[in-house]
Every structure is written in structure tokens, then in C-alpha cells.
Image (cartoon, rainbow, N blue to C red; front, top):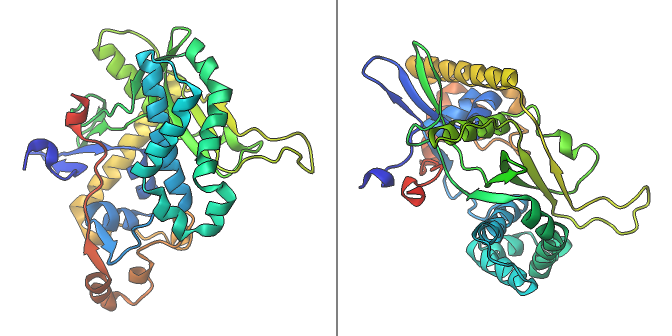
Length: 339
């Protein structure tokens, strides 16, 4: 097995007794929601046996949209004109790659509401009409789906307990009027007045800003990166004749800014969480606290480890070995793709 093919493990105990950690917003979100969830999911890699392989509808559409956006902005980066005829090709190719036929067959009600493949083509066509000419004129796309961090490019900080590196894969890196910014594509059910305010505070967005600034400086580009672009798309097409008020948009952008003080606070919080993770790693299985408040609302559904924690402690080993198997660790990105 080659170096780049090894399963990803986010921590390693160093000879000096410290833990070297490679973390991102998703991993730290799991720890914040429930330490026991993180232990079972990210440390032990436990997965339910026969777990449904068809992804939830909203997750699948989000993956399809990211795939489509990658194609779209690769063309923009390369200076290749995108024409109306390209839109259907982007949608169809991404649809096949993401295997959306399986997802839509498993959830016919939501599929019918979305419009199946024709709804997907329409969604991209409306985005093209709304944004293509604007982005072509104001954005210079410098990176598309460029992973970072596994080569220790982005050091968050180190203490007597941990050395922490940030990892990630922002959807885009763009320059607008001389300003370098990370862009993240998001899909939501619908856009309302609260949508643009949901991305600050955040762990992910200041991490992207910090990382992009560090990497830019390593390339000899001395610039401040203190703003993200959240490129938001609604899966549901807004009504053209709403009962109240004017029609809602289908596409909108949020622009969260982060001051140096906020970035410093983010770094402190990340390191603090990693020190707590290191403390748990040293103490073993019993150290990972169970957060009962998230058992029935983990990512909008029951926690997959509820069958373990809902029985008496003496019965848990048999549940773990009977209902769960060891799955593949999450892989943030493949290093050789970026070389």
C-alpha cells in the first residue's frame, strides 16, 4: 500500500508525547455535538451492519450540485466559454456520477417535488442565467476543489500537548477586485430572511480564510484573506406568486467577514478542542462523554449509535459486535490529486 493510499487517521502520538492532529470543521463538529459519537465514528470507525447505502435526498442533491459547480467553474477558470448547450451536459454527467437515479427512486415524493432530472437541468440553467455573466466579469477563479493540509501546510498552533494542522477542500478560490476569497457552495431547502445569517459564527469559514492566507504567503503572495463567499442555492424552486410578499430568490450569497481578533479566537478554540481530544485519547474509552441531548437530533435524525447507549452498560459489547462493523475511515482528499 502506497503512502497516499493509507486510510486517513487524524491523530498520531509523537515520540515527545504530544499528539499531532489533522482536523477540520466536520470532525470538530462531531466532537462538540457528542464526544462518544466522535469516539465511535472517528476513532473506532463503527458503522451499522447493512447500513443503507442510498444517501439522504438533500445530501445527494448537495453532492450533485458540488459536482456540477466543479465542472462549471473549471471552465470559467480555464477561460472556456460556457454555452447554453453545456448546461444539460454538466447536469447529466454529474447526475450519472452521483448515481442520483438510485436516490430519487428511494424517495419518489421528494423526487417528484424536485422534478427529477428535468428539475436538475432547470436548476443549473437558472443558475447560469443568474450568475454566469456576473462571475465571468468579476471573478478570477484561481482554485477549484483544491485540498490542503495533509502535507502540514496549515499549522494552527502547538502546545505542550498537541500540534494542530487544519485540513480542508474549499469549493473555490477566487480573486474579486484584488481580494482573495474562499467560496463554499451550499444547498438548502429554500431561502428565507435568515439564510444568509447562518454562516457566522462558524468553524469552517474562518478556517478557510486562515488556511488560504497561510498558503498564499507560502507562495510569496502577501495578502489578507478575511472574507468568505457562501454561494447558496435552494433545492425547491420558489413560487412565482407567493401568498405573502415578493418572490424569494433561488440563489443568494452571504459574505461573512472575520477580523484578525476573530481568527485568533478561532485558532485558540480549535487548539483547545484538540487538547481535550488528546486528553480523552490518553484516558481511553471511558473518557468520551455521552451527550444525551443529541441522541434524538444528530444531524436531523436519531444518532446511529443510539442502540448502544439506550441499553444497560453490561449489554453494550454484544450490541456493538452484533449490530456494527468496522467501516472505512473518512478520507478528506487524496494528496496525489493535488500534485
